[in-house]
Length: 309
Image (cartoon, rainbow, N blue to C red; front, side, top):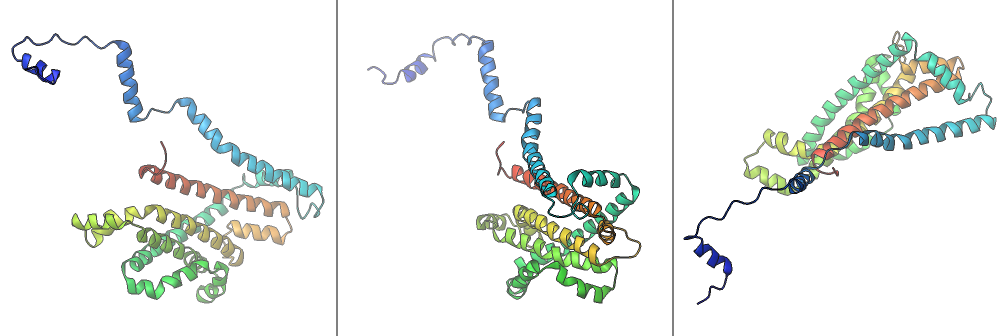
């Protein structure tokens, strides 16, 4: 009776026959194809020249936007909407800015402002994280102060300065008070939102693995809420930076010649070019901090597989 499947017959006959000859060596062309498939599976390396192209693709829209703003600014100056001593042109302002940034007093002011910004934002992150974790953990606490946190977040920070001056007089503490109370609600809301959107399946898996109490927060909930938490940190920085600039203009601490104080002095002396120069400095610092937050956010998204390779 013939065997239906030839492979079965070949297997039976192979018991008594000699072993087949060894396979022919793989040719170089075939080896190159296999290597190419392996490289495709692992994700090919970027060429060195691609780095320059990526930088240019990222930079040219920003450079174009700056050029458009400067051109519009110059057109307004040419239209003589305001006298040049009130609204100087870009050339005058950039010349003033170039002379200012070469002085030691300018960098001392930047140092004072950035120390205040980092200190206030660090305190806001600490307080906001503790409050956000507590509110998301305890339902009665959420019912009690959940809406209050949102209300504090939407409240203009400048409204806190009269109270801060009454509490702390004209001092660094008054500025820190407003910076912290302006940024902490955003940090807390970012963490609360991130924890709320942790998938329930992950929580059940963590329970099966024996995660309870602090270990559950440390190894499961907090890492899963990081994307929303980073967004809350970014928004909190924006609030703290605005609060700090308002504080430095309103609360002038003796001996602390920060960016805001120098800008106020330039306004008192009617030095419009210097005022606009400090506005540009504040804008550049804000953009650089935003770039750092975007880099952290992109790295986090890449780690979670939310962006293409």
